[in-house]
Image 1 (cartoon, rainbow, N blue to C red):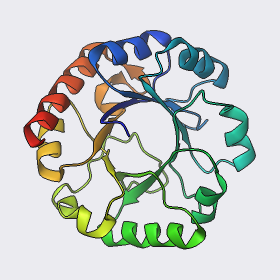
Image 2: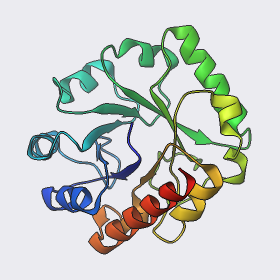
Image 3: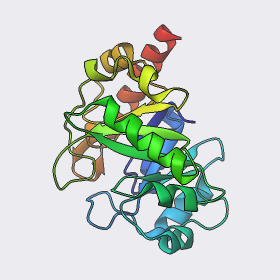
Image 4: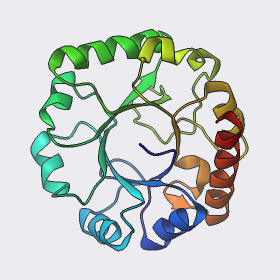
Amino acid sequence: MFRIKICGIRSLADAHVAAAAGADAIGLNFYDKSPRHIDPRLALRIAVDLSDALHRIGVFVNAEPDRIQQICPGDRLSAIQLHGDESPELVAKLHGRSIIRARRMDDRGVAAIAEDLAACAEAGRLPDAVLVDAMTPGLYGGTGETVSWAGLADYQKWLGDVPLILAGGLTPDNVAEAIRTVRPWGVDVASGVESSPGVKDHAKMRSFVESAKQAFSEIA
């Protein structure tokens, strides 16, 4: 599983900057209502052009299994990120795929995420990681809103061995503090490294990766 992911990549140039900066994953967003939506044909070009050492994560929101399989043939994507209201049964249906299950953290805290993992286990499969994002009604990520880091500090008590990927409002200025507070397996950023919605800022991308790497080395 990745440590540092730059999500919402929409060009070959952005993908190469992310890789050169030291990110070990990029997110390709197939949700057509997102400003970070990417055409599947361009996503395929990016996936083919990159080294296999860089994880390529396909991001979907409430997509049907057939559409996911259609967009993600073979080994072009390293993992599928389910970022909507998908059922635990859908997680179990996606055989042979690494699954990152995004959960938006509300006032119920980590306990609700743990309940969802239990439902996934009962349906037949735990996700390979849980990505925790901020709760904004009607929206599915990329809002710039932060999660309660203090509320996640004891997440291992609830989530056990399932890796936690922290998202939600991370920026080059706060990612180090977030990592030191939560001690997640990995971090995910989209709007925090943009000059406008869907437009990546290369200097912010480099700064984010540098700050995250330093913080991960401190907690190792």
